[in-house]
Image (tube, rainbow over all chains, first blue to last red):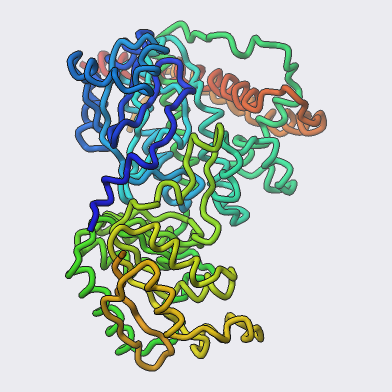
Length: 487
Length: 83
């Protein structure tokens, strides 16, 4: 089996370009950050601050090492790295820990956006005492290592003017964290719908139009949405006086104002905490399936044996539902990415992983319509498939193929071809025949479309990409489990 | 039972009265703002309203800072007097 990490270089993100004080370059699986001379003093102040060291040691800020000059010299022969180094007239190069599977806010269940917001506020509050401020308040500063957030942009920090009582990232924090969480809580709109096309989050004006008269004056929307809208509407946009630097005239007073503001944001964030046990179309799916207890135990044993035998290091669980098999894979020692189209069940998986400290990254992704590449040239945040191709040595497709076949009308050959692109090792796939009660429920009178579908046809499609190592029928259902290995 | 000096009672009374008056004015200010609501325009900064609101709130919190200083100064004086 090929180590999936060896494929990392094949889907490197493009170098970052937004921050003038530095640029991120991915090089042969390494994550390097080139820092311009202008950014060095702020970076050094941050790295030497006591709270920063605590966050670095606990892994809540990404692992960071300053490269020696000799190491930098050896890297300069690479064209992309050399170009970034020259363009920035770099003074320093950092190497960061690689977060093996990057994910973006529009793929997270709301629980993860909430936790990323908490981490951002916690950093802002703790660093305030050391005279360090945070320049931007966006979830793109955070990635997830399993179910835990990691602040990855170490150039987001600066030495602050001790007299300045303004928290400049406030509006961005509201737009990218608080308003999406509020819209999700109030209207049930998923973060995918809200954030895939809105890199800078939701504007108060937009949310204001969605609110009725009573909601407009109810906290926290009154201060997050309505008052800013009313004030902005009355403000002359050519008047730039509001952007001038402010001084409280007293560092103690400025710090008190900022601590009060950050404390208030933290309380608002607490009100927007996603509730556990949200019900959705798929939240009761596992309980409502057509297996007997014995049949389910037999399915579990099949998956468990395969995981024990091949010990995949990185597993993608497609259609994870509440994550029963993701947990099984994580307990067997794999790093798991669990995808499901339903944010409520992805949230449940996150809670389970977080509670038990399991290495599972739950994402709201529908494999038949995967997350596209976003940002400049669609390359700032690569699409899901670009990140996932060859990144796994184990793929689970349990009780999901019939949804792709029937509901999404994806041909069987296509589904298995994609499975083969995703895994470098094994795939455990559950075949569900047209006679199965769940399959019939989905077909709803369109049986003609699937008349040629049977175990023989499924096996023939598998053999184009995989060896069939073994299979086992599930008693009492028209289903069969297959253990496949990439040819 | 705690005893307050006449100055403390007077100072606290005046301040709380001032804060209450401020709070009672809030609905009228809001009504005025709603009545004068306008459509957002092109080139408008989506963060300008939030920034103005932050500056206004910072003004109030700045006052609270002096209230805190004032009360802790009186508490300190009272402790010194006891000692």
